[in-house]
Length: 101
Image (cartoon, rainbow, N blue to C red; front, side, top):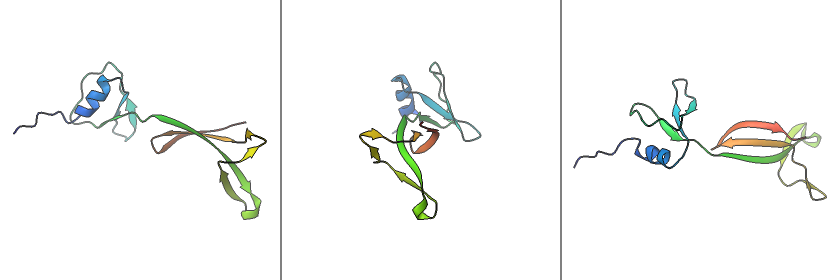
């Protein structure tokens, strides 16, 4: 029995459904494909662009633990979040961090 399924069939279907598709470049980085691209070369690697997730946390310097960095997600001050760091994730990769003032 002959298998005529394109090696990127799942990616092509995701692209047709409006997902952003990325191609791996020679330097191992991922680049968004323009949504009008309609050809998928069998020799290239493609993926659905990971969704960005944003989390917030608090980082403090704990002088009781020899100056170690201490992270806590649950610190509250009279009901007000005391988060001081916002993290941007794509999949399990941290892509950006910003200080919350």
